[in-house]
Image (tube, rainbow, N blue to C red; front, side, top):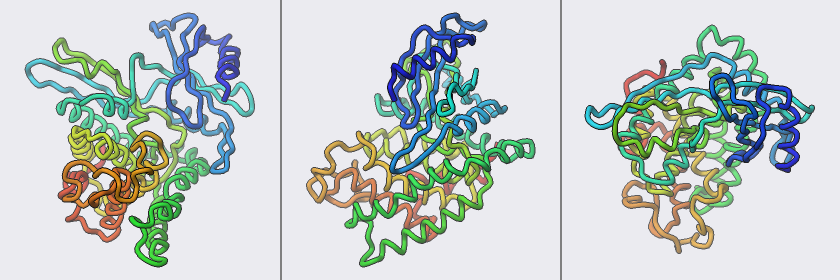
Length: 407
């Protein structure tokens, strides 16, 4: 996508609207979209001086093909009355922080050309995504718990909201988003076989053995996906959660309030909540595995406790989704374990402290290999229903929280 052509089209398309911009800055992220921060020519009545412009184009590659209808689904969701959650951290001494988790405000959705769509949305100044925040510097445990609790409460409320009778019109619309539902499957479970071939020493169970467990996992989770009628985000991970960078620097009073926004709703569809939960937990675990961010365990505990316990079968399915994600994604995404391929095969460093005792790594493995082995172990124990194994691990709260999972 040519940024100059993009901004010219955006500028012309918004010229006669209240969202006409004088300057555009390309924002980070976005594999299938171009995202810009636009400086408004005239601030809005509430003082808003900048907006986010998300440009979607029809894309066709060897792996997938998508059109701009994904913007329609995202705008439909953002135009709905989604729930928000506020949570206050008050240690009774030095700091009181209230965070509200919600979706961004949608100002405008237009289609300037048949193959291009624009969403004009709220911009959160001086912000970064949760993955970047957790990667950049240590997060105080109270703040990690604060964020995890609020995020768990919001996720439970969102999933419960999607089941309400009042959302039946929305569910009817989302039943049409089959192309992106299939894409979600293809880039996760559809890549499992190729991952086995890439890491046979870790993932093959013997001659032809890999085909058996891959088929069993695929059959089980395909039935879960097709049988689920829940409204799910579809790409629920720390990179799609943005929050103010100032959260890290606030250590004294007076009380403050901040918004945390849940972004990128174009993959929203009907499926099972286990796919949202499994992806989020997997991406958080990657920060523990590759960045040794111990505060992530606090965040995961708080998230799962606040969400509330799901049914046992659902908990096992969450772990299957999580494990598959840990196997198929990190080695395809640059930056997690640079140079792991050169160290592969017993020449690398071990995964974290105590990794061997936790069954997450064998001596001499790279971090990448250890992560993939751990993903396979999650799937094995979830498929066999070994709940006791999970009660001692990083996802123990999934099997120990009070029965709940609703608002």
